[in-house]
Image (cartoon, rainbow, N blue to C red; front, top):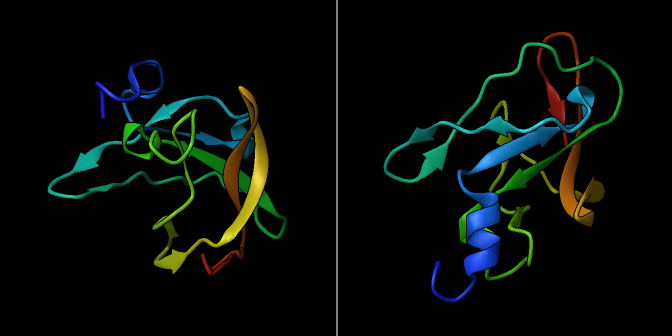
Length: 106
């Protein structure tokens, strides 16, 4: 991936997330080998649509800025609502809502 998309990989590394409710500030996603990343947020606003952007060097082959919108889960629910988020222009992100008991609606 590095050889094919060096600018993207170097700009995205390490894999990270930009939560909209935190003004899209960058948060590193800790790796859980062999094949996933995971982070816990306890401050997601309840009852309103939220968005986030995941930046992953592995996504550089499908998005020039490493935007990942596939196989992303929140509380065990697959996120499927692809939305635009601020980044290098408008980058792909995902939207969802959460209830007070942690139920996620994609």
